[in-house]
Length: 243
Length: 303
Image (tube, rainbow over all chains, first blue to last red; front, side, top):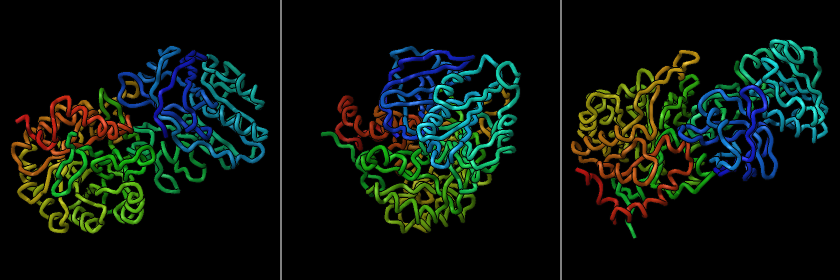
């Protein structure tokens, strides 16, 4: 973990209540897809943990949904603004277990960390499928970006206004794959858990105090013992999760 | 050259900056980002006889200038602290540490203190009779002078190391409880633990925290802590560790003027992991600014 100052270079709305922000600065602490950063917001006491969507040597991209005060504040930031950030947090996805044909399943605001995961797996020569679920057409984002990485992408919406009608679990029932990676709401996780055919990894969300393992605020029980979502998580293996 | 050394029950600490229990783990999360030997000492995660997971999640809620937690003393239990945490700590922290101990019965407090007593790394005990997040123990010992007296008396019997009793602000008269601890032989008072607090989510119309009510800490509680330290200082002769809302060097001076011999920093560590190191570095210039040569001289000077 490092505490660093970053400059906002882009902050644009890309779908309903959904913003893409690019920040430039030290990215050396980010080593795996699925890690997160913890952002200090003016006038709010706690930092806001946001997953890393993508990164390179100089920039971090995050995509966030405006759901409350913190993300509302973030959406008002302009190019050139500075941000105090704790970077390189969480365990991230373990890509070594993917097999030849991994499946990536994302739901709404949980989709962003799958982007860099997709990129990483494709660069390792994996032939992968991506299933992204949204509530409705206006919320759809990053379809093109996932496709341009070379992934087979299926979009579904709960109301059928775009792509297939239904939920991600309905789609993945009919797919064949060697392993799965997912991030999204708990209701989606439970549906996936019922139909998934292989091992996989889930990335969890929890209210955090510090984001780096000090306060024990975000702990959960697993079959492998107590874990902190911010430190030994947010990614847990299917086999260890107690639902 | 200003003097930041403080005598804490016979052990000199280089400065009065002490990360508070529950915000600093057993030191490792922080030793990875800076050399924690710059600190006066620190108070390790509240330790109980048995391993505890704590309360259900969510157990964190944000407030204006503060945080509510209901962690509920998650810790690996005293045996693992001895076999795993203290040996790991030995590699990165070379000063005496404060052992924070909690329990659900008098026997548990005594057992855990006795078990830790011969650990050479431990300089002081901080006995938590004020945790608002556990039922049937914790705070209930610290809400009556009689039970506070009893816990103090019994733990004093099993260790020769200095005992600091950590008090709750959620009482009608904290002075009487501090005096009961002193009368029972406490070597110092640690105060204050979190103030009870609550948040309700407007969307779900339910409490944010699974346990409904938790402990409120952070900058917002500094005035509450200050007046309590001020009052207790007038009533007892033993040293006070002042805790509550401290986030910079000037806050440290203010708390010491009220009567604290040293201070603990809690919630601020969680949002600003370098805060204790920064305060240690800022303290000499803050002292110079206010014409202070030796920190020990200002303890209780506001009286």
